[in-house]
Image 1 (cartoon, one colour):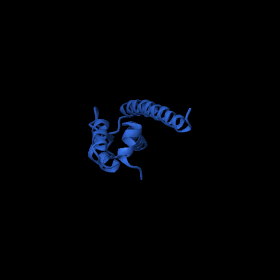
Image 2: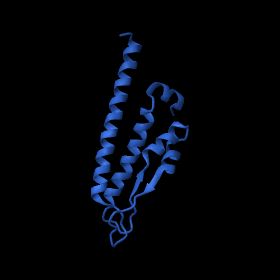
Image 3: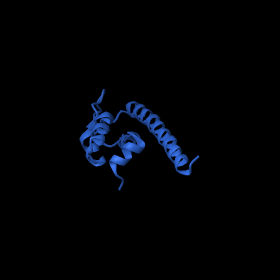
Image 4: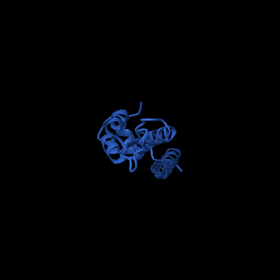
Length: 120
């Protein structure tokens, strides 16, 4: 297990952000997979709240548990399912862009550290 203090100094907030974006992607894909499941309640991660908790020293699991929210549907379905595919697709796309940006920052940072270690 990595040291959170070292992660924050070496990678800034990006290490925690990548972890949380990955977990959020899992919630969104679970919503999409259960779009036809009666009484399934769509969930999402309040990313800002989870990131604040994670940077305050909470474990990833604790930060996610405290920031997971049920979605309020615009048009509830008759079978009690609250998944709205349009909303899920937008959330998936936004999260994917954020994930890619965070990964790019981390890749650049790792490249800088690697070059520094090699003395380039």
